[in-house]
Image 1 (cartoon, rainbow, N blue to C red):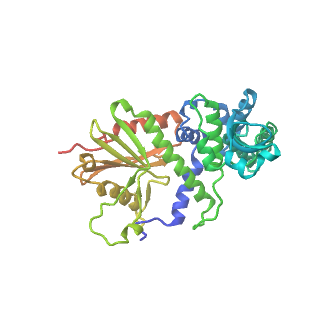
Image 2: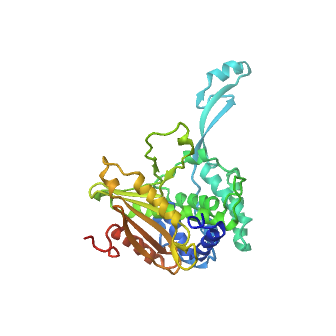
Image 3: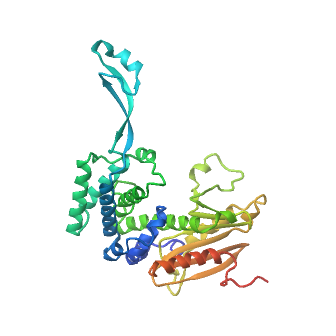
Length: 383
């Protein structure tokens, strides 16, 4: 078993090294792409340089965004209300009015939409400011977040955290760029800065929780980067999180319950050129010590996983599945690797992205990865 899977201690240590060493500017770069905010790239350079960690950066930028919105007025929205009134407002609820005999009291049950500043997005922002105030070591910044949370309360924004359903219904329009930034920063407070403490089936160290959230950030950022960079007019399509089915023939009745799901991180396809690339992003070191400790090798479990994605989906009716390509993509600090091999008709690449480089060089490296996918310069010519 030790030759297949790393120990949990080694995995956590490897993750923590990468997690702690990424410059704040590159975490911000990942955040922008992960949350579809690439248009804000290049802004807030001063805030990025002044922030010692990502938590402080999120707090500074969230405060800046909220202060801007308060100066220009927060966005209003409509909420549905049902109330018993002395006069008609909106629509009459006939059933409630008759069943409660409201006419005798000179009242009427009404349903109406009310314009309010207490919208789900504004409540999310206030909740984020409130929790940040108690988690930041910079006293001046903590005071700033608390003051802004109070300011939102004074203009009518309640402190209740919105539900997922409420946030899903509160769509942000393309013209609401400032709201989009503010809400994405608030989401990051709960997604990235404050990992969940809820009880579950496994106990995770703080470092492991941080690694899990940043792994999701890395995966989502890479998927959105490819979606933004690959020209759709040339036939490129990006599919994050696609579910694969096992090619089961004859089977016992209960086998489906116990088989693990196969869910890829990213699939890039181009029907015009007949290519399919399955990209699996990891957030650990690309190499691990071999079973006997005398060399470093690629991780067996990762190779098996990608190999399963490639071979299990082969079908004669789908020509692209027979020559689909696979990429295992890892973050790295001060380290670069790009190796490729052909395994039973499928090109498999092991690639790192050095997140210690300036953001412009990280972008260039990712663009190069797109260009070199397939038979790159690192792959010897076929006979």
